Image (cartoon, rainbow, N blue to C red; front, side, top):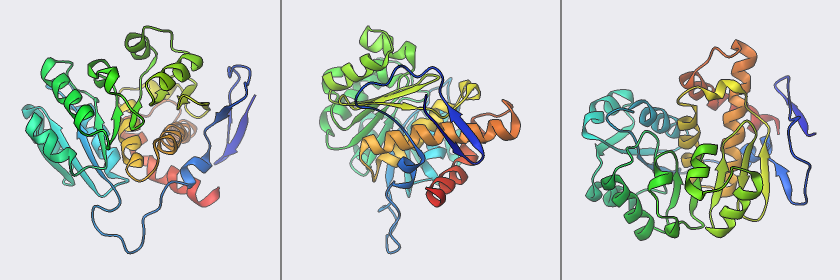
Length: 288
């Protein structure tokens, strides 16, 4: 059993499978070693994220993902359904908001360091067309595929620049296999991508190794917390390799949740999680 203490909290995992060679855990050092802003940098040099998010029914997911990303990068472009545009513009003055069209997706993808697709997005043919166009024509960009994007993306277009963030049901639907650590590694290797499998024990694999994340608690089943994770991962991906970004994001998301549980029990939501992330990140940077 692995454990460590942070902010007076002891993180333990009693259900971790028997360790195998090559298995590791995420840690505060993954957060500490994220790329730092250079003192002489200018706007845009510390990350630009394109968020393709939201639908008529799910505007909250778009807001959580984009607002979280905006905490850690310079610029956020948001493409969404026409009905969502007033909500997104009101949610944050930092967002650069436009309607989701193929033309706009192409325009803003050229400017972005990383592209987040999926939180709250509809699973329709038009969105499928846009997603696969981007995957095919912007292979040099970093992609975070979440939620609906997982079932819309053509797996043949996945690459080393893609991170997939399924929960167990999404993993099974996408790969027609059980959501296990070994299967995460198997399909990460097959499609040359990184898989972040969300569960009570999160699994991260680049197809070579299996990493377990021991932070987090049942409060993170609250709606929106996965969108927070996706936005943070997209932000970290801008200036870090995708494995580093994935390990740091999944650790920090769970760690922030653990701080909230210590303070408030399970009475917290995605908004609370998003607000505490900068403090949790600063703690890791200062103490590890």
